[in-house]
Image 1: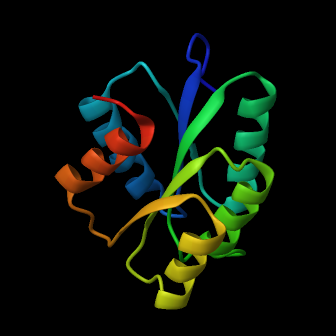
Image 2 (image 1 turned 180 degrees about the horizontal axis):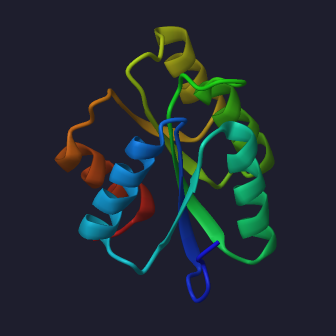
Amino acid sequence: MQTVGNKNAIVCVDDEPILLLSLVQELKREIGNGIAYETALNPTEAMEVIDDLCSSGVDVILILSDWLMPGMKGDEFLIQVHQKYPQIKSILISGHADKAAMERLRNEANTVAFFPKPWNSGELIEAVRFSCNIS
């Protein structure tokens, strides 16, 4: 974890490493290094990262998650996160999410936006800034 000195973190979850790299590079370029950016390749790993961050006093302020991942779908993962950490907001990024999953996320998780893959960079960054109260 690279969160030394950072009180806030964004966690990005996707089973495609190249997309994670691209997403984090985009966030760092547009939002800056005042926030720690952590990644996970699946929901189980992501929950471990979130637990570690939270137990270390770091505020996870946002999760950007894919929907279609091996082992657990993104809506199930984000609902579990919300049940354990209701203050954490989330954004779903997926080319495959179905309407039922999106409705569950609206009703059962703190999901503030949905973006298809490939995402529109400007719209995604705007949603991240809004969700994290970053100007």
